[in-house]
Image 1 (spheres, rainbow, N blue to C red):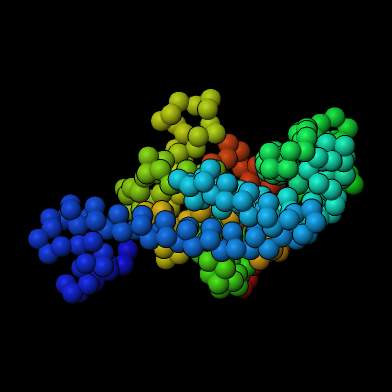
Image 2: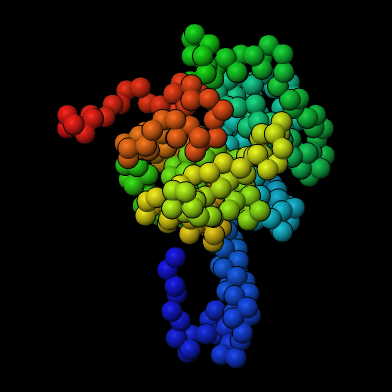
Length: 347
């Protein structure tokens, strides 16, 4: 890890004092990092609010109502800037639906099938449809309070409509279209755009997932230091990252840890990001917009297998690193069958 050298004249910028003990300086540095992270999130949220205030349709989204609605959301999530940022992203998607159906909230219930039809065209997941329905209902409730018009909530999608929307997420043979493996070149080429969009921590999240082959939930869990350990494997004489697998509920807790060797410079960089907590899960639509339609949050994990094979690791070991109970799982779902590597003797 790089050591930051600070001149005494700059101590005050970081909350440091010359008479501090080592422990006090550590605490001050931690507070400085947390403050910096909060300021970044506040900047992101401010930019998001600025964009959402530009209503897509002045008739169905009048600014004299949308701006107070956004202000209400700001108050609701004032202590959770990350959550506010996510809710504003949902509101952006909801505005596009409103532009498409061209109805005021008092008519949403009777036009709910038009909304379900929009879900179908987007092939959204059940969870994302639930979130968008929630923000539409929040907007409708706010609209009803301000205008005095009756608003009836949009029901959660169910029955045959739900089946149709889920079918839209599958191909014609009813096989769910799998995420494609991410390659290092994809991450390299996208880094600048993520940075320019103030999404550097989103890119860091994929960087960590890619270099350790982690499930999305496992990367998220690394925010809690209790869920990972960095140890020395005395047999192989290499540092390893041990990650707690919360999904293995049938096993005793001591058996839920998986081990991944830290053997490359990029993995060591990923460890730095983990220790500093400088990563945040990107939205799938963000990945699709910046990197490509065929990628999602599982793509970095899928790319890990091919990267490790290219580095000379055996599939049996890679399967252990990924936490699979069977090598068949690694081969069937994570090995890119379109790639191959020439043996050293033939190269």
